[in-house]
Image (cartoon, rainbow, N blue to C red; front, side, top):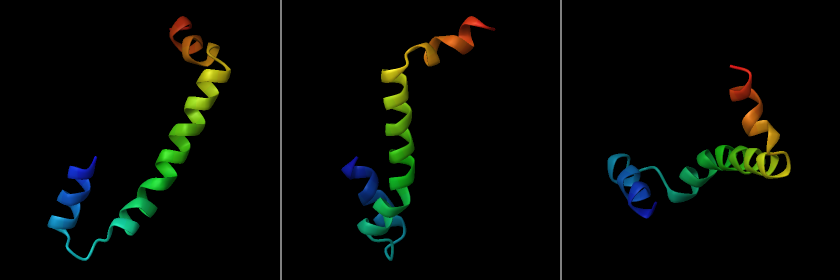
Length: 52
């Protein structure tokens, strides 16, 4: 993951690490919420494929 951040700052020098983290944070939070829901309710992961 560190390499990706270095590539971003190499391409866009005015882009800081804190700005990258602030931009990615909402996506990480929603991923953690989804992961928590799937752990708490595993049926969510199997319901849709079962109905196709």
